[in-house]
Length: 160
Image (tube, rainbow, N blue to C red; front, side, top):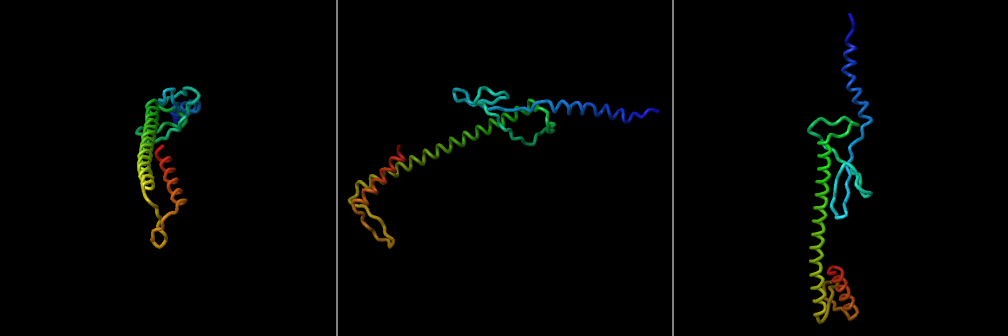
């Protein structure tokens, strides 16, 4: 009687061997990001122009079984990866806008405070400092001019 165990094993393993051989030659999916002349951000699987940059895609646990290493990503996996990158970009821009808004508001508050301080200095008959014992010490003309110049510098810095 003929031994078919080795024979059937060979034919069951053959597709896996062929798949692994093809997998080594298949290119991995890449995602590129670029900005067009209108400032719009684009993502794609092929670079457009010289300013396109290849993005590193962070992977997460997939709902489906993980792809075999070396095999290209399925279109649904590429779409998920691109949408993840787009979402990260959207959040990064939102954070940048929020920081810009906070900086602008802080600058406006500082401008109002600096103008009030300068106006107060210019309208007062005299300026004073508090010494280490808690007593008022009236500033002389040179010290007053220096304090007013510093207040003007603050107005210029925060209100320009």
